[in-house]
Amino acid sequence: MKHKILIVDDHFVVREGLKLILETNEEYEVIGEAEDGSKALELVDEVNPDVILMDLNMPKVSGLEAIRELNKRQSTVPIIILTTYNEDELMMQGLSLGAKGYLLKDTTRENLFRTIESALGGETLLQPEITTRIFSSNHTPSFSEQSILTQRELDVLKRVADGKTSKAIALYLNISERTVKSYLTNIYTKLDVTSRSQAVAVAIEKGLLHR
Image (cartoon, rainbow, N blue to C red; front, side, top):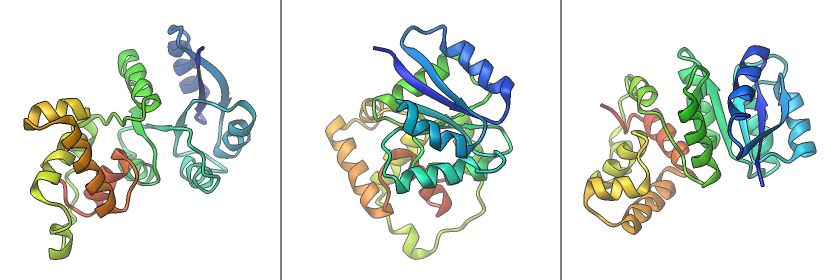
């Protein structure tokens, strides 16, 4: 059975480009396209997608507004943000709202498939070239914020921000994969988040992650 993809972007060329790439893979099927968040919300109910590729900066109803509404509906469909190089702030807001990851609109075919596969598997695949740029935040954490996470938890979260899987993090830190997942659970609780992407977004916002 093919995985159903919904593409949401106000640019026809972007939608067509993504559709053409996705159709080269027999595992995926584009079952809907929307040019704004309002249409996307309608289609989610109609076509029941497995993954949504969501632009954030759109007319009428933005991608962020659509994500907020899907959260209210308690939707479990994983959302991957479509972004450009000048939309870091919007992207971080999208991750904070629970998006499973993000893709530059000029991403490679391989990275597109890899990111979708991660989202379908419940993982978050972050692209280090983007998170590295965002780490330049000028926010200085307060003393209370600095003490939120232990050094080991920060070590794990930094690897998550680098796009590493739990298995890769375990090998890097010479600990078990089960221990990595335990650290992630603690991180989620302390930051009041429910996913890797949210954890990274909140930690960057608080100035806890830096290069």
